[in-house]
Amino acid sequence: MQVYIKARNILNHTRKILSSEKNIPKRHRHDYADRLDNEATEMFLCVSRANAIHPTTHEDYVLRRDYLTKAKMHAEALCYLLDLTYDAGYLRNISMDYWYGEIDEFLKQLSGLRNKDRERFGKLE
Image 1 (cartoon, rainbow, N blue to C red):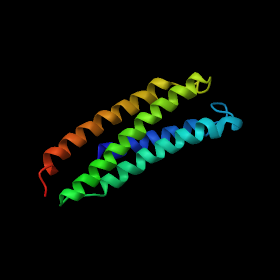
Image 2 (image 1 turned 120 degrees about the vertical axis):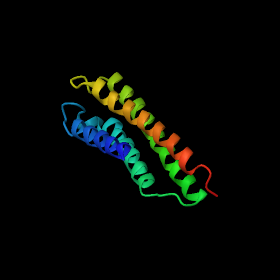
Image 3 (image 1 turned 90 degrees about the horizontal axis):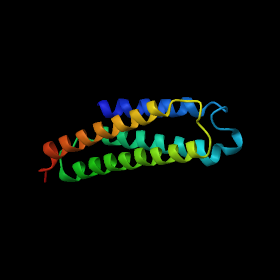
Image 4 (image 1 turned 135 degrees about the vertical axis):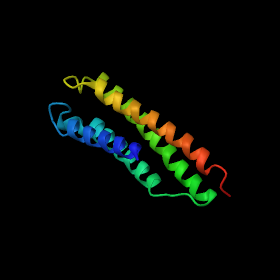
């Protein structure tokens, strides 16, 4: 699943950037880095959980859809936290365009997957 790979790439990129103290000093790690890492991790876990569900009933479809919706919420929260972190004066020496581009691409792929799921599984009972 492309969405899974993209979510994993975002998580890995997030952790790589946050591992350097020159991007966010230790004294602010809890305020910024930990929250960014939590959102990226939750986004990836929700996609992983959705990927593990192969709907055969309506309940399976709803559960998968809910995980994908949560993944979208975590991706959007990650963008908001990136904005706040950047506005606070951190992450200045990295390319934010790449990060936002990856998240934007993830959201587009996620939307496509949700639409495809609706077509494939929406009529299960």
